[in-house]
Image (tube, rainbow, N blue to C red; front, side, top):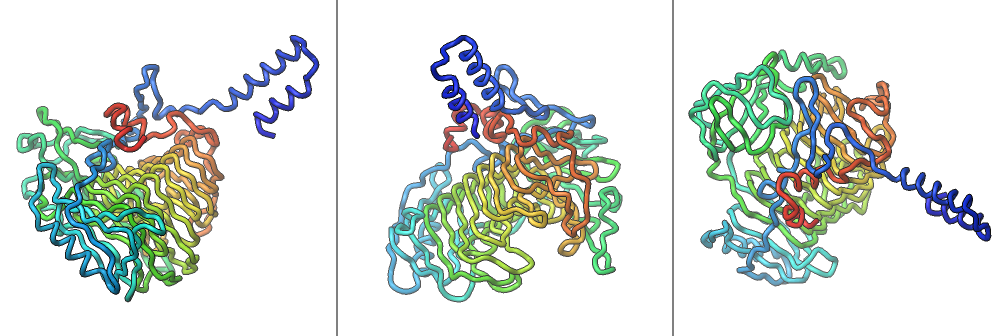
Length: 534
């Protein structure tokens, strides 16, 4: 019986017994019910009396990071409605040349004061598309007239191919001169580091903070003994570079402060960390894809075969994808390591046939930083809705997400700074958990520890797998769901105590309801929430 039903029953039972005892009984029941509905509280992040957020730190200074910098223009900025300068109508046959010509025409226009060239508008109708559509210049938006079944529909034909490629080219052009971090330990979530040569930096400089995976660190992570079928497996090869893409906010003496906190810790006992300025001449910005529906032939094919995919994005800073429905794409979207400050809003991937291959496709594959995946979903069977890839550094945020199969599973080789916030998942199992912050051991070719410093906040799930990497933490706060005792390959592990240091308020949501939105309000105020549609 629900709490409301219990109260109604009690009132009915006491009908015609107008006594103080009866009234008191009802009031007591009401108070108990109200108390049962009170939210929980985290010791790691919690609101003070004035509403500001307070953070706990561990013995080494590590904390839950400020994730509010994820999203277009660094979070809390309204996605603009770019002026239409070219309109396209559907024609019989392949529309690819027609649409691409319009995109290229807009790309040749000058950039206005806000960094935009203009939008291409696809009118309502069905457009056959037999090849990839490309946005390769800053300030260009491709916009349909809606994502409904009777709005702008791109019906994909021809051999399997990618529908959209958005991005520039190249990578960071890093200065030869580097500063070395001199701190013995930099905690996760920190904004500031000490260096041996701060004088070469100025506020506004674009920098990369880089550390190499050393043999000592790989050994510390217990990742140097992976085997599969009797053969050694490589987690991260010694010398692999892990990069944070940041901007200098302040220089004070030998201290550098960054615009966005760091998603990982740096322990000088195991790793050396350097900072260098960079340029990125061929990275594009202020680009978007909006308001359309994509339909491809449904296929149940292994991921090793050619597929119809929706989107790849590379070498982009400040872009967005919003109001998109994609039906039956596989491995639908990828956001590469050179993507920064992008919002994916109301993008819904729908599968009409289940996938049965052992290696499942992934619909949102994240390798970039400051990516916000908001109010989106995956429906279907046999896919991974969201994964992260090798060496991903956050903040990256999954907010108000829903899926009917599996859920969020960092895929391989050490991602950091991931938040899964106020999301709901069904279709989980011990072998395919809805949240999987874990050591994948020898899966694939040695995927090993997939994520550290990750947070699941007020998540509703069927199955949770939350493990603690050496020297790191993964949090599960206010989450509903069953913890699985099974590792990826069937080895039992101890079920975490409830509650434990990083597993707080099991089955009782905590306040604030959304960590990301609360952090956004705390940093930028109420207008930032309105800017992101709250």
